[in-house]
Length: 565
Image (cartoon, rainbow, N blue to C red; front, side, top):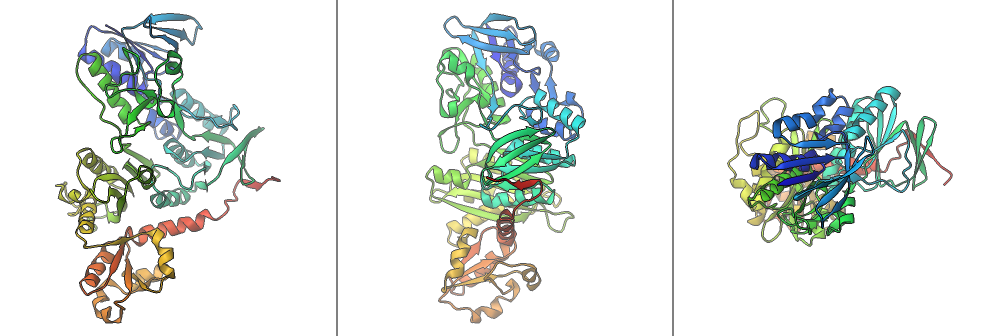
C-alpha cells in the first residue's frame, strides 16, 4: 500500500507515524510546501520573543530523523499542485529546482492547514508580516534583530495576535493591538475579557477596540495605518493576525465537496467525498461536540487526533472523530486564559436557554503563601443543566480546572454534578473545596432554589428602581477603597444586627468581593423573609468590567494622529 500525504505538521506527520506503527511495510511519502516537516506551530511567537532561544527547538522532526525512525520519505519544499482522483496521482513541483513530476497513490491524505486572511488594504512590504510557518517566524525575528523596531502594531486580537503582542512587548517594543470587535480573544465573553485588557495595559500594551483599519502605506521606515474613525497610527512594523481560512485550493480543484467556510467535508472517519482521499486538521469541517453543528476548529489538538484516526482507518482499524469542543489555553504575560465549549454569544446563537455561574476563588488554600485568585465562568442549559462551556482567567492552576470541566463535558456530566468530583487536594495546589467543586455547589444551590443571581448587565436598571435595595456586604475598609454606585454597605458580620432596618417589601441585591460573603448574606436574608439575589462574580469582576468601560472610552494618543478624513 502506498500512502501520499500532502502537508506535515500536526495532522499529516501524526498520520504518517501512526500508519508506520500499524503497517511496517507501507510506502509513505510526505510532500511539504515549507522547509520544515514537523514543527511546534504554537511555539512560533515565543521564538520571536526569545523565550525559545534556539530555532532547532521548534523543529520536532527533520526529514532525515523522520526517515531514520519511521522509514518515511519526506520531501520538503515540494508543493502538490493538483490531484487526479480518477488516476489516483498527484502533480508535484520541487520549489527549489522548479521541476515537476507526478506521484501515484493508493491512499491520499490532505493536511494543508489554514492560511492567514489578508485584508483588502494589505500590500506586500518588508515591514508587514503574517505568522504561519517557521519561515515566517525566522523572517520576523531577523527583522527585529536587524532593524530593532521601537514600535509595532498587531492587527487582530485572537490567539496568535495576542501572543505576538506579548512577545513583542517583552522585547521592549511599544506595541498596540487593533481589534475590530469590542474585546480581545473572541473565545471568551466581554466580562471575562476585561481581565485580559487590564493585564495588557498593565504591561504597557495599548488596545484599540472597535477599530477598523482601512488603509496601509509604507513611508520609508514607517508603516502608516489609517483607521475608519479618521485616526492614523504609525509603527516600525505591523503583524497581521486577523484570522485564518481553510487552505482548500487543492481540494477545490480536485472536486472534493466543501462545507462551512470552504472547509473540506469529511465524515467521522475523516474520509472526503472522494474514495481513498482523507483530510485532517485546520482545513476540514468537523462537528461541534456540544451543538452538533458543522464548524471549523483550528487547533493543534484536534489535528493530531484526526491524524491518528486516519492512520487507524487506512490500516483496517475502526476509529471515528467524536467532534471538537474548542478547548484552549493561552498565556498572556503572567495571566492564563482557558476556554472550552460555548461562550454566551455562541449559546445564544444556537438557541440555548442557559444559566451562568461566575465565581472568584483562590487557586490554592489562602493560608498557603502566594495564593492567587481565578475567576471561573460556567454556562449550562437552564432545564437540563447540560454544561455548555466554561471560561477561566487567573494565574495558577487555570489549565487544570479547565481540563476537568472539558472532561466533564465529554463525559456528559451536569453542572450540579461537578460538586461530586473527587479532586486532589493539598494546600499548595488547591482548596478543600476546589473551584470546580464550588461551581458545582453554586449550580446545585440554583437548582434547589437556595440562591438567585444577578449580573453586571442588570445593575443599571436596578439603580433606577425604587423597589430594590443594593447591598455591599464587604468590610467597611473594602467598601471605602471602592464600591459600585448605589450600593450601601452593611458588612456580613453585622448583617443580622441590621435586619430590622431593611424593608421587606423591597428586593435585595447583594454584592461582595468574590461572591461568597454575598451568598452567605442571601441565605441569612432569605430565611428572614427577604427576596434576595446574589451578584455573580463579585466586586472583583464588577471592578474589572467597570474599569474597562472607562478606559475603552479614552483616546490612546501615543503614536496616533488625526487625519483630514
